[in-house]
Amino acid sequence: MIELGVNIDHVATIRQARRTYEPDPVWGAVEAHLGGADGITVHLREDRRHIHDADVRRLRETTQIKLNLEMAATDEMVDIACTLKPEMAMLVPEGRHEVTTEGGLDILAQEARLKDVISRLADAGIVTSVFIDAEVAQIEAAARIGASVCEIHTGPYAHAFYDKGRDAEAPAVLAELDKVRVAGQAVRQLGMRFNAGHALNYYNVQPIARLAGIRELHIGHAIVSRAIFVGLREAVREMKALMREAAKSPE
Image 1 (cartoon, rainbow, N blue to C red):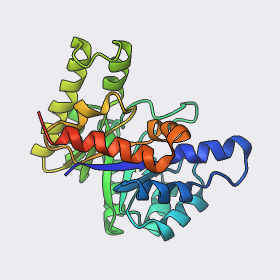
Image 2: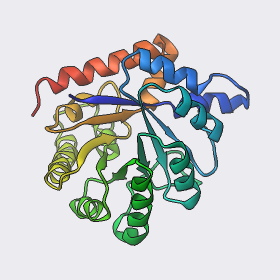
Image 3: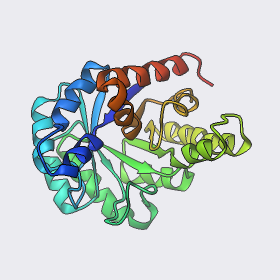
Image 4: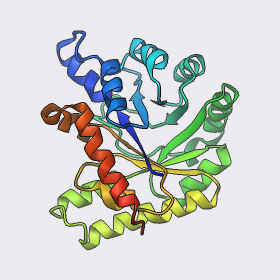
């Protein structure tokens, strides 16, 4: 059954806008859980622009559902993950000047390094995911380095959906959706778990949630944005209902 991992980074973004103590991301995680989230995702960035080390420690202590730590493949982050032991660590590219993650991890360019990182995480009992573009060569490289999960980057699909007037049947949208579908097939054929995420929202999520074999969607900004108006529990509940409805009639 398809699951929803709620990214609560932007609860911390609001807090950091005033450099204060509220809203508390840990409280946000509890509210997301009560709304039906199956997991909590946070990205501990090198520059600590939103989530801080103390947030992750407190989340590890209090979260009763799966904790997914997004992280760059640096020695510092691997050490933190091995100490805190989240259920899953997702390796992502990271740039100081980006607003958010702009593309998938280029595994082909750093296979040896990433294989070592995944080995260290596995030794600590942590399932490792890689956030990659919908490219078969990158998926094959993910299998070679020992990744258990591939999260396919849905940004190009989401941007096409918006650019084409939210027309789910526009050729450009269908082309991007097919790339994700084909990528998901390759992921599963190579024995890895097929997850997806990035820029998904209440209008574009269902075609992705309907893809065969998809296990988890990780969604943050859209849910936190909706929560301003309806509350975080309800925002999570609405998103999960859309996903579950779509998953009942797979492609």
